[in-house]
Amino acid sequence: MSDHPISRFAVPSLDALPDDIALRIRKVSEKSGFIPNVFLALAHRPDEFRAFFAYHDALMERDGGLTKAEREMIVVATSGANHCQYCVVAHGAILRIRAKNAQIADQVAVNWRKADISPRERAMLSYAEKVALRAHEIGDADHQALATAGFTQDEIWDIGAIAAFFAMSNRLANAADMRANDEFYMLGR
Image (cartoon, rainbow, N blue to C red; front, side, top):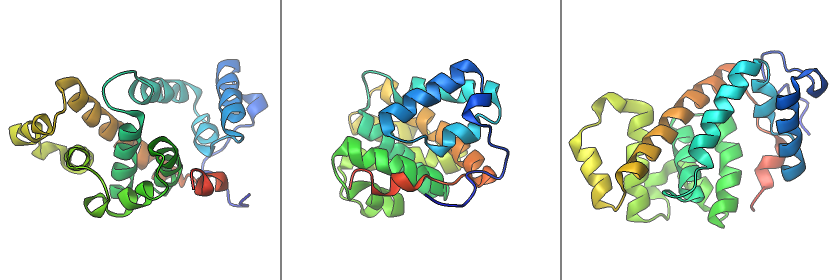
């Protein structure tokens, strides 16, 4: 494990957290074998922790529409565009697992335009990046490109919502100097 702090802000101990937050963190730890640093870092503010993960779960754990791998691909691409090391590393690990492809996350994080992805995925990531970086430029042509690629209106909403949520998350992680767990680097490889 790294000796570096996981956040520039105070990180509460698990025992000091409200019961619902401590329970959620323990469940995540049991499933993954470690506590992802984002959980402890965001527990700094319990009400914001609850709101963050409620929206995260609504976007990322939703049944139907985009696949879980597509959702993670959006996170990795937008996090790379926003230079968010924490999210690229953590969600890159999840993408490697969900896509069952150890190379794809690295390719998408560095330059999704040169990644070994489908035309549908390129259209998705082009829109996601525009939402994350230049949402004011989105117009009818952007939505038409997604419809032509086979995305439904609900899926287009999801692409935009995931990109927007993680653009916010990237900024918060960067502001907090959030550090990715060492365990993430080898997951899915």
